[in-house]
Image (tube, rainbow, N blue to C red; front, side, top):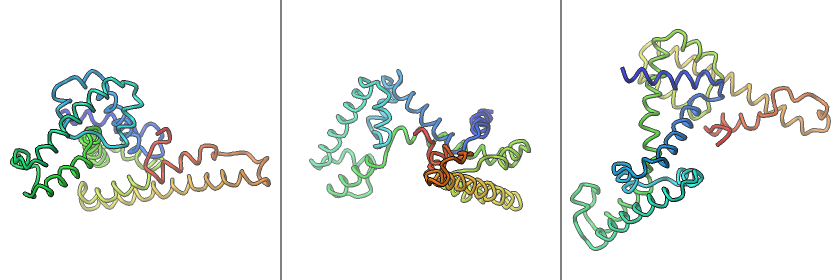
Length: 241
């Protein structure tokens, strides 16, 4: 089954010894989406139709720019701007073509323009591409936890999660698992999260102490990269973002 393919990236993320395997999965999806968008695919009609329609968020437009395919990005932004201008000219002139496509719930011209701009402001081709697969990764995680003893043990021995993804898994547990299995998951999740955020917090405390002259000759222990790891735990990002 196709779904079984998703066990590979989920297991890979947990095997990577990351401070948050969910962040790592998300970053891998993001990197792949950027590479796909800035590769030959930007010339394909179906891809251009989507990027013309929804554009990119501010975070991902910066990442696309850093990809160095300036011509590809310029072409995508040019046709996206063409479509935006065309749509807004139709709306401001009172043309009913756009509203007849059920893009907007409001019928007045001003409400139509407002809805169009709000929709554009909250849409991103890269975000959509990431989220479609990320949801399947989360489905797979819960399926593995329920059915795979090896993965369940790997989960419990992991370095935990960032606060955001701890909250995500906590809220999803009751929807994906039933009865005792849901309670077991939540207990394991909370234990591994708290144990590991305390570990990083303690490393960060020693990192801070090392700036005190009294500890200058003491070993760094595990604190040299504590600040980067604390950023992962508190801000739901990989340290190299």
